[in-house]
Length: 223
Length: 99
Image 1 (cartoon, chains in turn green, purple):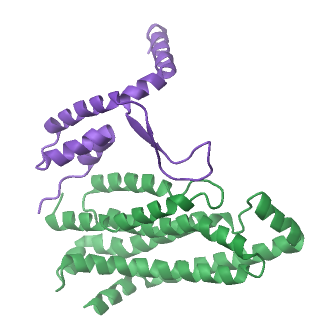
Image 2 (tube, one colour):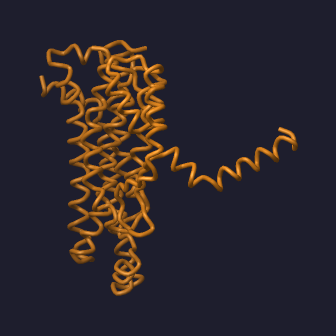
C-alpha cells in the first residue's frame, strides 16, 4: 500500500520535481560561473578580503527564497489535485489508517525536498571548496541553513493550507504561515542564526502536525 | 473629519505616542524580540515590563469565558491569561476539532 501511495504522489509531482531540479541545477551553475568571474576580475585576495572583512555572501542572493519557493510549489502540486473535486475523500478511504496516509504523503514531499537540498549543498560544497577555505564554507552553510529549513516548513504549511476545507480558515492559516516563515528570513550577518537554529528546527517539527488538523476538519466535513 | 475634530484627535494621538512607554507597561506584561542592538545573534528574547499587565490579561481571560463556547475552559483561559489578545485571536481563529 505504501508503494502505491508513493507512486500516486510521484505521478502528481514528477513534472514539478523535474522543474525544481532544473531550477536548482541552473542556480548551482550560475553560482559557479559567478564565483569564477569574481576571481578572474577581482583576484583571490580581493574576493577573500571582501568575504572575510565585509561579510560578502558567496552565493547569488536569490538562494534566500529558492528553497521556500521549492517547498511551496511542491506542496501545491501535491495537495491541490487532492482538493480538486474533494478527491482526498478517495485517498482517505484507502485501507490504511488516515494518520498513516497523510504521514506517508508528507514524508514523500519532505524526502524529495531533502534530497534536492542535499544534492545542491553537496555540489556547492565540493565545487566552491576549490575557491574558499573550510571556514568560509562553514559560514555559508550556517547562512543558508535557515532558508533550507524555511523550504521544509513552507512545504508543510502549503499542505496545511491546501488540505483545509474552508476558504476563510485557509486565509487565516496563510497569514499565520507568513508570520512564522518571516522568522526564517531576517537580514543578518553570517552565523547570526546559530542560537536560533534549534528553535527553527522545532518550528519545522511542530508544523508537521498542522496538516493533520486540516485533514481531520476535512473528514469532519467542516463548511 | 473637519478641522475642529481633527486637531484634538491629533493632540490625543501625539499624547498617546509620547506616553507609549508607560501605557505599554500596563498593556503588555512581557514582549518578545528576535533582534537586539547589543548583539548580532538572532534568538528569542523575552522582556518583562510590569506585572500590572497580567491583571489586564486576567480580565481578558474572564471575558474569554463568555466569548468562547468550549469544553476545555481551564486550558483556554489559561492560554488567554498568558497571551491575552494574541491568545484570544488564536483561539477564535482555530475552531475546536470535534471527534
